[in-house]
Image (tube, rainbow, N blue to C red):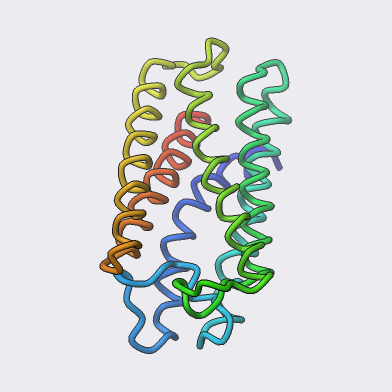
Length: 202
């Protein structure tokens, strides 16, 4: 069973890309460059119910299962257990983001309570997948065979996430193409998850 669960990190990394693409097909005139991923599940959107069903709920489960795998199979490694906890937190926050949709207008100055919960959960998601690769970069108790390679890879992913998060902030203020920068920012986090998962089962 654990051998199957060990692949959930890889599956989640692929699933999220496919899920967003599939959900967008049912949202007329949806723009991946101008709109956030969460707008697929926003209140009143054409895919409000569909998007969480194919994205948030199964993804949350996959994240939690992979976090459980890390915690249960590497209990002797404090660093790996901590990373596993971050992945579980990421999964739980993914569920919360699905349960509480953002408002239809991301630029609203008076967000509803569900939107505020969604935003805070999204922040937790972001932080959890900053902390996890940071642990990988700085930890001396890493069970991976080639720790130097995964540290360099994790650092690159962190820098990519930071850069495009900054670009996202600028783009959001200028109302240009925040969707592109959000996907690249989160994309580096998902790339880290994919790479880390491969290293762990190699």
